[in-house]
Structures are given as structure tokens and as C-alpha cells.
Amino acid sequence: MRRTRARRSDYDLDPEFKIGVNRSRPLRPAAILCGLVERRRGLSVILTKRPETMREHAGQIAFPGGKIDPEDRDPVAAALREAEEEIGLASGAVEVIGPIDPYETGTGFRIEPIVGMVDPGFVPRLEPLEVEEAFEAPLDFLMDPVNLQLLSGTWGGRKRRYYAIPWNGRHIWGATAGMLKSLADRLAADENPGEEE
Figure 1 (tube, rainbow, N blue to C red):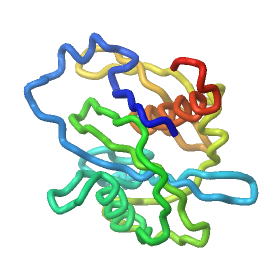
Figure 2 (figure 1 turned 60 degrees about the vertical axis):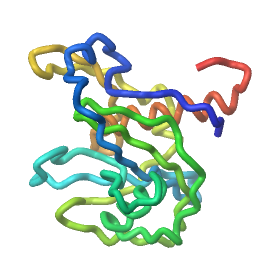
Figure 3 (figure 1 turned 180 degrees about the vertical axis):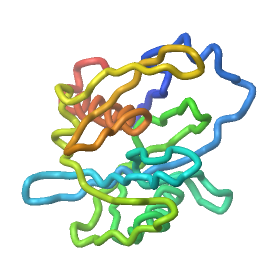
């Protein structure tokens, strides 16, 4: 993967929306693990579904991850710690590939997405207060631009656009879909190094 990284955000589709957001608050650092598993049919991506009972992000599809704690050495350590806490993925079962573009959310987080290869023998052990379900989705499906939808909704009385990827009865949207698009853009740029994003 290329070393130069762009900044991605929930505001990429509607830059003017960011003007109305309170910019005085600092972004809270977070990290997620984009875990790839090699299967016979190809690579898959580990995703989770948040419980409907959660105060924030209830029922949403997400990568394992969360806030970076002061004791975390770096975003990689935070992503691996969160993956172990949420789905029982031991850090020794992950071969870290590296980060992709950081992602800023409308809820005030600056997420560092970390990509890593996961041991195919891994069996999830869920933390039920944080994760209702862990599942794998095919990487080739998630990376195919044909499957990426552009939808819109109203937040705070204003219309906003966002990315979504429907897969197997699940609705992957918002920051998760945005980070998957970022990964797809990065992979496409690596395959065509002479082209600009």
C-alpha cells in the first residue's frame, strides 16, 4: 500500500455540512481493525453488528475498534486491543499490514483504520455488551464500485449524503462504508500507480 495518506471523512460528499459543525471540540482518537481472512473463495473482511441496546451506534455494522486509550502504544495497539476485547481476537493471530487513510466522523472521532491478515482458524468470542454478531463479508464484493450506493438522509434538519453497501441482508453504511471505499480507492491506486485518485 502507498505510504502517502489522505484524510477521509463523513463530510467528503457534503463539505459544506462541516462548516455548521462545532469545530472547537477536539477530535477523539480511535482505531479500528480491518481484519482480512484468507478463505478458499478469496479474502473476506471481519465485521461486527453492534447491539440494539447500545447508547451510540445501536445496531450498526462496524469494524472491531474503539477509542485509543492513554496506555495504548499507538493506533495499532489500540485496534488490536479493541479487537481482542470485542471479538476475542488475540493479537498473535493478526499480521498487521498497516494503516490506510484516517477517517473523521461526524460524531467527533478521528479513526485510524489498521489493516491486518487474520489467522483463518480464528473463532470469535463476543463481548455481548459491545457486539451482537461477528461475520465475514467477501472483500471482492465490498471493493466492487458497482455495489457501493450513494444514499441521503436528514440530520439536524439538513440533507446529507452517505455511502452504503448492502450485503446478505445487512446494511453497511456511514463511516464503515466510507472506510471500505477508502480501502477500495487505495487498492485501485496501487493497481494503477500512474493514475491519480
